[in-house]
Image 1: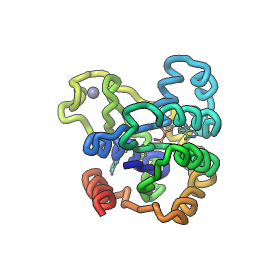
Image 2: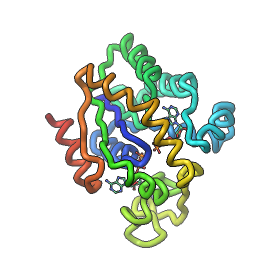
Image 3: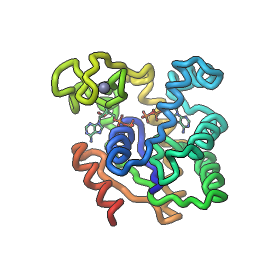
Length: 215
Ligand code: ADP
Ligand code: ADP
Ligand code: ZN
């Protein structure tokens, strides 16, 4: 199964991709996570991406297309993958089509998480993750069961993203509206676009996605 999760920052793409990845045994390919790893490791790509990400702007198509092209040829992607945060521009979507075509791979669904933009600042500024296993949490909507201890791995270390600040939310939403939203008609025209209610509770969003996949 080949899926794309689409939606503005904070819509719940990563949360749902993590769940569906586990349930279906296919990897979650998050360009955001890959870029953050490159920034942390100080690679040339990371050095280029760091300031752009902190400003809430999009990293160049060339960089992210290169990252994904390498990734989808790895063995664990053979039976499918979930693209989380890619593509984000029409040029990236076209590049993805060009990657899939010679490999004989088709996208099954592009799942759009629809949200009320007013809710996104709270979603984004309250977000944190386990520093060890990457499990996602939220100050208000998903606290660890035992305060300060990761539910999944027991770690007591958590981290917050450098770009998850109220000041950058505007720039990121703007990038979504101008550069990413044109992907909706692009995929609607191909008959693969499906919508789920990103404002619903996390479990309900998962149920709606499962409904699409089972249909
Ligand atoms: P994205 O990957 O689209 O940026 P995330 O999955 O990281 O979004 O979600 C952003 C924040 O909102 C996280 O802290 C997450 O725990 C929380 N969150 C995700 N889905 C929901 C939901 N349906 N209801 C409330 N909070 C949510
Ligand atoms: P969010 O979960 O908030 O939607 P991501 O983790 O997907 O954010 O992305 C964080 C940042 O990484 C983006 O604001 C952008 O700077 C960069 N980025 C991630 N994916 C892409 C992409 N496909 N194209 C360009 N930039 C990207
Ligand atoms: Zn953990």
